[in-house]
Image 1 (cartoon, rainbow, N blue to C red):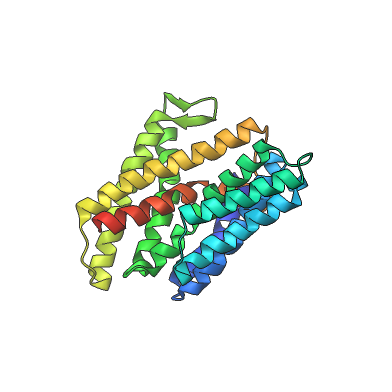
Image 2 (cartoon, rainbow, N blue to C red):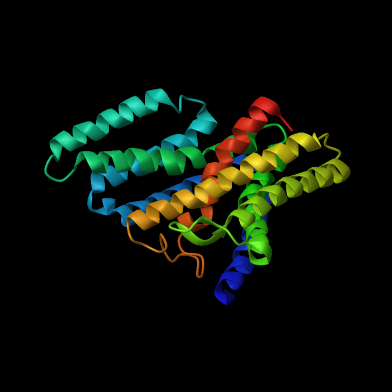
Length: 266
């Protein structure tokens, strides 16, 4: 616990500086770097590192998804078609080294990590993106904090004991409600100090949905780790594990926040 707290206080200022900087291209660099590190950890965990052609394709997908938000080219079906086509060609060329399961993992990792993370850039590019991007952090990290303290205080019923033995249903509910309230508090700060009009009910709903997404992201990462028999994806952040262990919630939250704001606004 002591190591986790020290790491949190070490990296928190860096995160705040990133959130406060005004340049969208900086977020492009951050997302690309985090995506590549996350892919590396995923490849290591799933033993895909032994196939360099597939790893290279995965890293190319990270560049493609990141740049797509700046150059506005198709990020969906067209990319999937040519990307999958190249992977299958590689399977035919290296038929004794590349299996169908490895192709599936490569496709999954590219969709799971760089594609979903790239929505962070999309959020930052929105009108008001300098405020909206904070909602990702609120939903991801304050959900975890609220869930922890609620679970410690009144948690009795296990949520998913096979995936995360310490998580409780009470903690999950507390994390969800707490996230909604913190989103409203954020809206109050933005409204009062930055003269931005906000819809507090919409922010609360976004907080609830974002919190559920964050918890699903965390449990999904835990499920993958359990399947491959590892505790953490890496040891980049002492006490917290690898980069994927820290952003597992953000991966699911970013596209949810982007979609909600796009269709419903706040």
